[in-house]
Picture 1 (tube, rainbow, N blue to C red):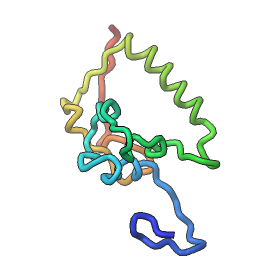
Picture 2: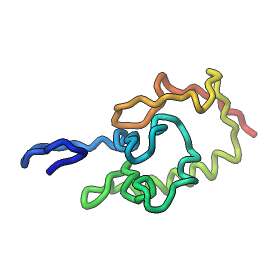
Picture 3: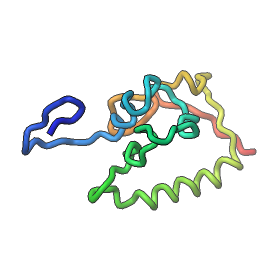
Length: 121
């Protein structure tokens, strides 16, 4: 089998790193390293990024994470409860566009961390 032009011999163990897939410029474009939450609002049908298989944080197929549905529901509930009640202030003074993610990494995380102050509204 050949993946992205690299031949993979039969019997080779292949490990998938979801964070690396999420930073693939052939799928997400040349600005894939930039933090851009609005990217999800402008996906064009027929492109690789709009394909439901492009977002692989929980994997896909028979080996999909068994906690995927619960995790997504839990995240939505937390956002619905926290966002209206609190304000998050960047204490380091970095704008969102200046945040660089650690890549490669098994998990997407800001390089150097992200310090915020939480204020109750």
